[in-house]
Image (cartoon, rainbow, N blue to C red):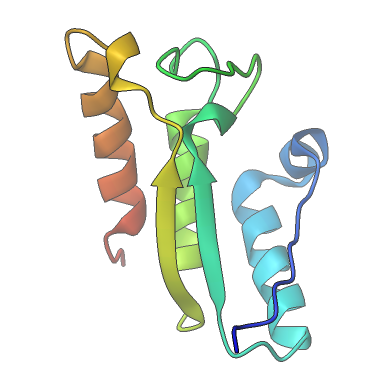
Length: 116
């Protein structure tokens, strides 16, 4: 027996209109309203803007910036309901010098570390 899966998504244009951090906070409120025991964060690297994340097989023009990613992760991972995270879709064969991986890792660490 597994956990029931409920996916939530919001259009990036709408998120940017209200602000990335506020949209993440609003999402958490919706999740709490649904009285979920917890939630899992699934992050595909290809949601990041093409200009900063070309090391993916499906590139996303006008995707998230590293700052936006960090802001969203800080809000979500700060919730006691956050059960875990998986990070996928990064293709190291498209990052021969490791510069993209380094920038991505820095954004992830900033987003996943507790902040005050």
